[in-house]
Length: 255
Image 1 (cartoon, rainbow, N blue to C red):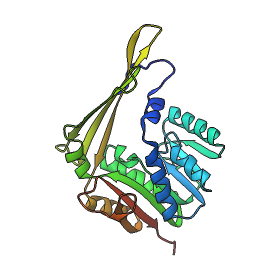
Image 2: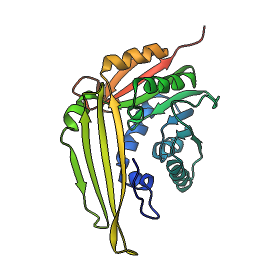
Image 3: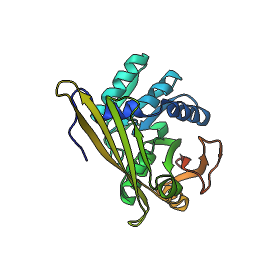
Image 4: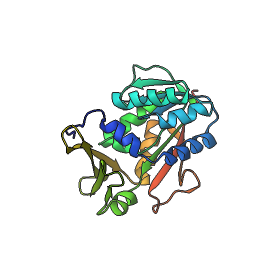
């Protein structure tokens, strides 16, 4: 996946700069409308943008991610915002050693779509379920089959607004191998004065999604109850025309 990296800037920092910050505000608003302030775990929290916003809103946030460079950025963002965010480096498919439980767990920005197989997706659900308190809420989002088959079909985006930092994004959908998969080929071309040339920072990200019936069945099998699908950050009922679904579910009370 990886490529030659230009000095002083990793893919994590470039990706963090690229991402639309307005979306994090929307995710934060969605969470605030769904659950009251309290202890919360952000799975796949990356550079901590959402975690910081939630901490500023009064939530006690733990941010879990597998990437050390992303967590370093999260630490920087939390320090800049002067909030406390606890950072955990772990895989969302297996963090059983972390015994703490939460009233709310969230996971956005396609995190669960990056789990490449049904088994790994279900492993992620199991971990979320096991780390919820009884009656706790799990909120996450996924891209939809429509996003893969239509929005990413022949998709190519180039951004050369900054001549010293050119970005290219090409999507390659694949619906032949089961599920609805897409590879995102992300390339940054960074100009370096020391060698008077461009160097490329590249990553290929793989996502896979499924139809709504699959998600409902998998969540029920994991033990979740009160499963609800919405779209537009909870503003409308979900359907096949949406590009992103927001899923809310709960862990049942112990008998």
